[in-house]
Image (cartoon, rainbow, N blue to C red; front, side, top):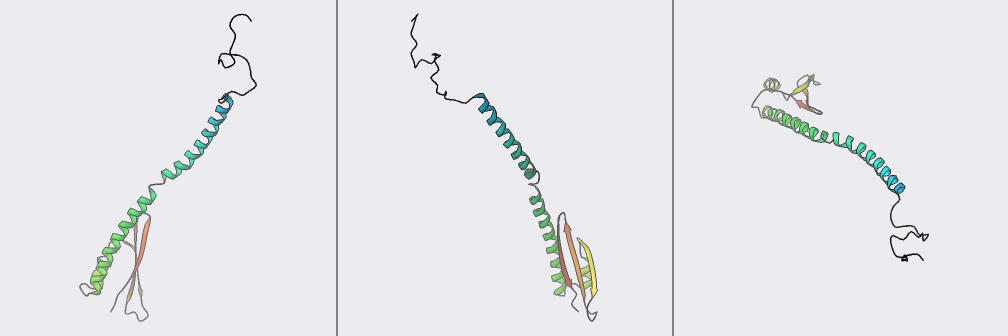
Length: 133
């Protein structure tokens, strides 16, 4: 044997023992990266549409709060009419925020039904009021 003998546990030994080395091959690393890239692209596509529409429920809640506030003001005026503090024509003239007002005569034409639809943004609320003789 010329020179130094190589020890079998020596990492510089070039003998092939037939066992696979511990670690990943370049092909396994590339396949893993490709799989993660595809999954990341799918996830980002899904999340981007969700994130761009995430503000919509907040806007709908704000619109609903605005409609509710307008409705409370209108009902408050109607309560004043029912208590006799104002008459029907004053109630009608004080309606604000109503976009659809239709009056219809009753069976004996002695009362009026008023439909008022309040709209704000994507929310709308319809309410009926009745004139009591």
